[in-house]
Length: 284
Image 1 (spheres, rainbow, N blue to C red):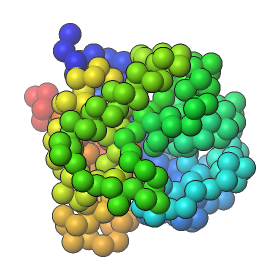
Image 2 (tube, rainbow, N blue to C red):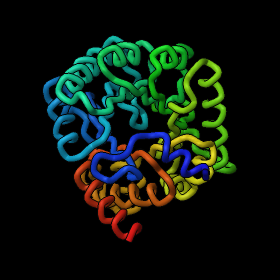
Image 3 (cartoon, rainbow, N blue to C red):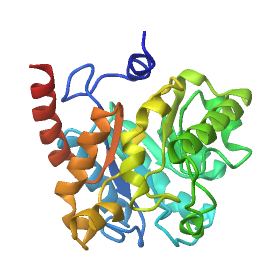
């Protein structure tokens, strides 16, 4: 079996796109300051309603986050982050018992509360830098998304120089996999994210999507989160992140063409519509 086939086979099939279709992860930001939709779903009821709507549009997975990771963002105390995400995860689990729910956090304390509330995946932009994160995930037998990032969201855009962009991202994530597996995480439950827009320039991001094959060679499913990001605005001239739907769909299709298994998106319905047409044309 090829590395790409092995990575694709590690996850359940898409509800709308067949057993080999990519999974579509809908973004549920419970934050006042996220770059695209900060404040729109900052209250528990609004966030739950948004997640239910994304599920109705066909999302396979809902990713709930309570701390913005936009460039320049300041950290949020764990207690505040828990107060934002835990009630939303519990509410979504009660309403959507079949949904995959993840918590977007880099804090083991928050992850533990979220897993207890019904999440089954931890989506960590720091690749489990918190020394308690990997042991926690291992004990819970949860899934873990490891994302490439240099520094912190506040500082990351000051460290964007690479000699070999794809190679360095791949090597960093390979080391992270070794570290979390040594701490007890099931390697079959590790997902890799190259970190589009995190310590990357607008010119870097398309090259990273084009080079996903090197990351797939590590043998884990790959998640790509390019939705509405600045590089799409730089390529298209669209300054309002919420108006970057078409460019975001283009990035999603390119990611799938290069082997991405999971797409983290704001615009679920548009992404699924495009993927249905893409799959029909590729499989014809």
